[in-house]
Length: 134
Image 1 (tube, rainbow, N blue to C red):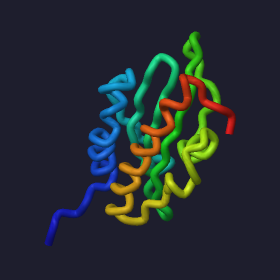
Image 2 (cartoon, helix red, strand yellow):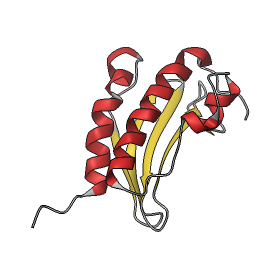
Image 3 (cartoon, rainbow, N blue to C red):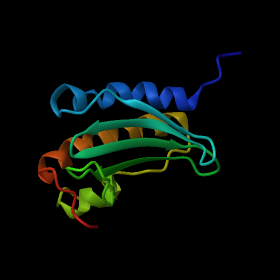
Image 4 (cartoon, one colour):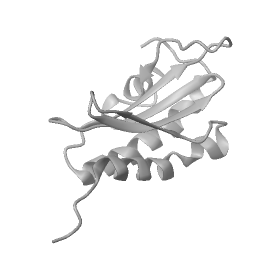
């Protein structure tokens, strides 16, 4: 019998690698682990003076991967955030289908991590520190 996968740990591990560009070239802090047992989710949160980026894996009946960007004001208050798939469409990068969220298997979940990272690389330069209403 093989080792049973630990999906939350696999998600965080893969996300640390896929989203390393945030700390290396986009000015974000090292990621913080986020766990919410009530919502059956785990993830990573990256912070910058003007923005917070959260990557989460929701387990449960219909597993999914979600990325959310939230603006932070000069006084530190968080504004209204938006999901990456909505922002991707709003800034003209393409259809929401390019940023799928469904992750019914480990393989699909790992694939979503990289799809979201690629989409975020396209979206971030178009935001100029502002997150549009979507």
